Length: 53
Image 1 (spheres, one colour):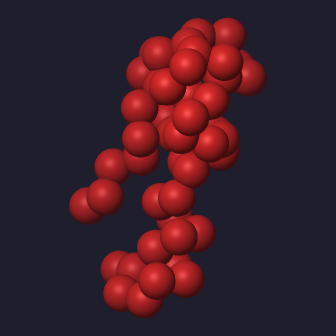
Image 2 (cartoon, one colour):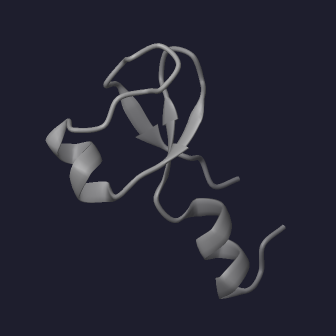
Image 3 (cartoon, helix red, strand yellow):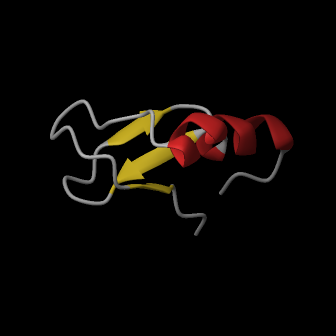
């Protein structure tokens, strides 16, 4: 799929997925690990990085 660095950054860098409603959102790693980011749909703080297939 993404073989060059620009596409990898666009698809995987700073993108997280909500564990409850599966919504994708873009935020910084530090803010997610501190718990400062919430899902805009369900207001959950349970986020995971997007999966690299």
